Length: 161
Length: 336
Ligand SMILES: Cc1cc2nc3c(=O)[nH]c(=O)nc-3n(C[C@H](O)[C@H](O)[C@H](O)COP(=O)(O)OP(=O)(O)OC[C@H]3O[C@@H](n4cnc5c(N)ncnc54)[C@H](O)[C@@H]3O)c2cc1C
Ligand code: SF4
Ligand code: FES
Ligand code: FES
Image (cartoon, rainbow over all chains, first blue to last red):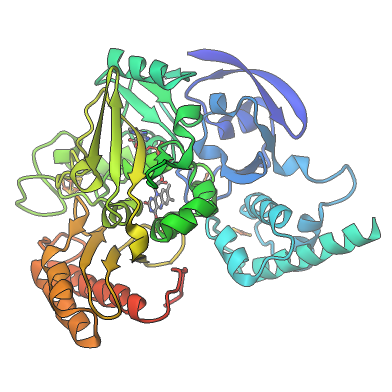
């Protein structure tokens, strides 16, 4: 069963024909060419497919694309401007919280969702938010540091505005 | 792992959903948050012809106190929203703690209370990819006639890991079940069956529309706690919810419910009796923990022995009862 649906991704409206059994992850990657969102376990355990939907971190591998109509989806491609990284991305680079980079889009999106809601998270809040993500390279400590740095960058940015 | 073809129906009212459930009974599945169902479908454990998507039905997305003081929660309520809901925190903090212990924030942002209550039972053999399972003959739960987890067993012993289940039972909650043209309300305890392959009393054309937490729980206290390997995105090794009512060290009533050690939550009746008779003290906690050990009817499986499960139950009972003596704390993901 195919359906024509309209998806709002990174502020743009896309009209796409999808099979009802296709996940949002498949549609983002295969139909819209937004391959920044990664596919890892495909069963909800690793968080590499994290996107932000209506302000909340969610797993694109466990959402049917047809269920995402009328919702506002943000992917890793949508957070930076053409020539500047988003503060969360910059913090990950500066803290060396990236090695192979495969987990990074999901963790950046998870961190962004956290900071949007809780601009000054404590360690427990960071741990809780990141619990649904896996990094096989860095060991998570640098990632925690990066989230704290991102929080500082964002606050500094707000001040200078 | 990809999903195979199915039909998808998004009803605009509960009535429409119930009609679809009735017309396709046997070949239909309710999709709420999908964090259990879609995983199982990807693993080839379920292949319904029709999916009825109920997550955003307004009738199921409510939480309110009714005139009698009971708390009514729609089955479609999102777990993250419930975790932050002030009414729930005031009326049933143990249920809120159970909800907070589920999976990860990502998953709670998608999942529903009804989906957790109906969560399929789990087992080391069952929750694998189709390819993985194909290396062994089918088991009871996958259509065969043997069990790989408990040798010689006559039935499936897959585990009920729904974290809200023990909390709901300890709180004396009722489950509201609807089908086209009728509705029934049953105690949460009777909603579950001690049978891994058919673990709830839901009929194929029925759905869970909500839960009722009776008022009166405020006269006592309820605590929930969960032990798991990682304390994050992790099913429980064992969990417990306890409701005690009384003055000081006397105990008028006690309800203790263990989760994740059997195909249904386990209500510890003898253990509760010990507390009612002896009150709550360091000595009675020890006696209660021993009672729990002896009344727990559990089996040895390939992955955990009955002895381990009894040890775990004993620890759970002790820890939860100590939390009534110590100044009340909300359960956190404490690191061991
Ligand atoms: C990585 C990971 C970790 C997890 N950890 C935990 C955990 O720690 N604790 C825990 O309890 N669970 C855990 N889960 C399981 C699951 O995410 C939760 O139980 C969740 O609450 C299920 O809710 P849902 O709305 O997503 O259910 P769905 O997947 O939509 O539904 C689950 C089942 O219930 C049925 N169903 C749903 N709603 C209704 C209804 N209203 N009436 C009748 N049937 C219905 C569905 O048909 C399906 O069979 C985990 C899952 C994953 C992927
Ligand atoms: S407990 Fe036995 S029958 Fe049940 S799912 Fe596991 S292996 Fe299959
Ligand atoms: S790919 Fe979605 S959680 Fe792993
Ligand atoms: S940087 Fe390699 S998995 Fe995280």
